[in-house]
Length: 250
Image (cartoon, rainbow, N blue to C red; front, side, top):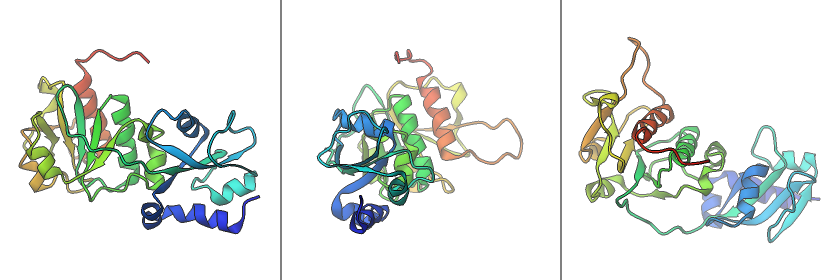
């Protein structure tokens, strides 16, 4: 049985301040928790709360079996899935972009759903690393984590000022713009480089824009249509960059 203190401690991790102080965050769902239990990445489970039958052979330093009603009280999801892990935040060494791969740089992406979806896209398209400006939404926000659908465990994310990163980059730097860019469908895109995606409403900041060598434009095929959601735009751009690469076996 969970105590009130247990429940309070878990639910407090919805606050960024508490996550940073305790260096912990929440991952939910049998699939993501099962991947965590393999120990193949930098993340590690500190405490695991699981309903009977939700996971095969649960493994963690602390495993507590809970009832469905208890899971509802500690879960951050509208429909709890039976497994919740308190996970330690690892210290991942910073790595600059280097030749031979594609990277994403997110400039002021503040919506958790967009950020998480872009990380999921990065996983699908084998993006080596995602760089995020300091004003992006926090990676360990529960909504961001859930939106990644497990990609958080496989794609490194580094928060860093983008201007020096892009200014010192030896790879091609490309970014999406609403006006003045080149139609992405008309270019032969490089197989390596840093792709910059901007804020949902403001786009790429002027400071970062100064370091973009190739400005890309996704054409609209209906007059008067609204601009694309940044996650949708990221999907189109990543697919365009990978169209000349052989697909990886799955």
